[in-house]
Length: 302
Image (tube, rainbow, N blue to C red; front, side, top):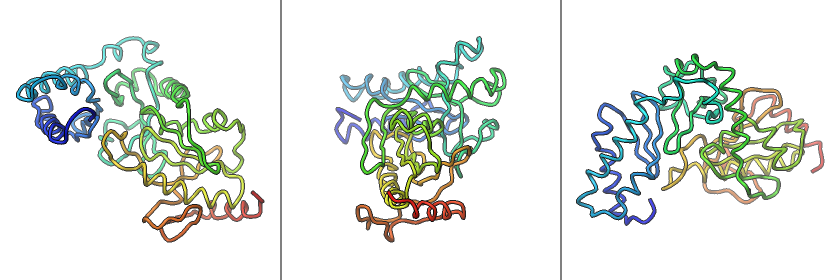
């Protein structure tokens, strides 16, 4: 957290972890957020907590932290009034969102589909200070299809203004929904590259909620380079560093046109990567279809 010494930072994390505001809950404290794992899945941003203690003596921090967290938790667990109102008032704040299966209360989200092994697509209601995942009852009340359509459409407004690109590997970093824009990948690719067609699909990685990495498959040389490069980048971004967005997956996936499922094809396993060369640090797990595609692309000149 910015503007805090190491000792202050550690003290604040301990106060948050031990706060009575989380009585009866299982929480994971990160540097910029708290994930409530049980009995309900919630993510609370810690910006208001940091603001509450920054200019206060440390002997007052415990009360300030508890008061602030109590307000945040109360606002969330007390329900969102809009969820009891007309669906139209929700639609511009609902997002389709990736969520790891591990650590999730999946029994609350029977509506959620698996888009890749271990990754779900859930529906999230965006608040200024937190993100709340809708449960089955809420989704049923407002209509799954209508919420999904709105959630996907709203992702199209989450692209960052800029991006990095090297040898046709694109890196997009921005809001807490950028990783989830893989769910509207054809739109993303056209918006970023101008290419309207992806006949062979793309290689993609979503290492955390704030990052999307992709390469449009066109030729074998480019594909094999991108496999190694994206795997290296995904491993780098898939770290729970201070201030980093929530983690998703370190894998490289193959996005196929017309498919609703991302196929994992590779991941980084070491530090011996040499730029542009696939070596022993790249673990691959190709399906027969992806292996055939690489053979086909090898016959295409880059």
